Length: 388
Figure (cartoon, rainbow, N blue to C red):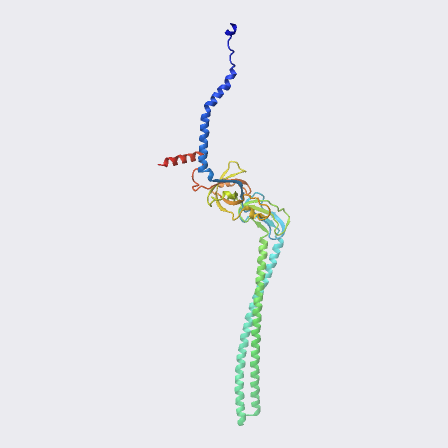
């Protein structure tokens, strides 16, 4: 009787917690499944409209034309006019070499040039004098020929008169002698004229030779002037100085690397090495989004400019030779040049050549179309509504 009247022991309060959670989980599983399916549908729609047209790679780097400067002449470093990381303009002096020796060489070359110029002036005066002597010789020749004509006529008259007995034989012999003297004078005048003309040819040849010496001296002076100008190493373009190896008082030789100038951010670009399987839809002008590894959160805009004429492997020091030995196919990469958007000047100032970036190229026919998840869903709904 007591057994029948005994009450069943009460359940502990803690046992109601798991049961309550299970009931809530059973109630939430269908909404959660619906939300998961909805998110999956949104993601598939985004992938079909946007995602499958995006090609990305993390094998991309910022690049720029870095000029490593070296002296064209040898000498001691007299002054260092720029420090590392200093921004310089094109033509700014960076390093100055000792100019004493090169100034002396320039003065010597200029003195040689002045001597050559004076020699040219002397030859011009000699040529003018020689032409005057030729004129004089020609006048003397004309005078001798006139005397020759007169002596010949006198000799003929004397011969006629002596035959008729009108003059003495002595006068006739004197007239013949005068004729012979006139002939000799003409021959002498002709010889003198020939000598003066030959001397003119010699002087003209000397003038050509002296002109060549003058040109050689002028070239030597110009070279000395260039060498003197080369004592100052200047920036070839606007940029940032770095990797300075020159030291004050150091003796440097031709071709020795002293300092480098990196381009400013606005003259940099990105080289992205895409796989060959990613390239079929690449076209110049396609928009690109860049993420810089060194600056988290920085997103830059760019565009495709050109594709390399060959894969990167063929430009390496030892190109692969696939016709020998065992063959293992490896997906090749092709460098793609990406041009940064100059409108983002404030963000470009943070870039440096060599930084790693992640590049994402939009290969859609209409790159200006929306790219977000919700915007893609809205575009799909708009397309459905437009269908009659």
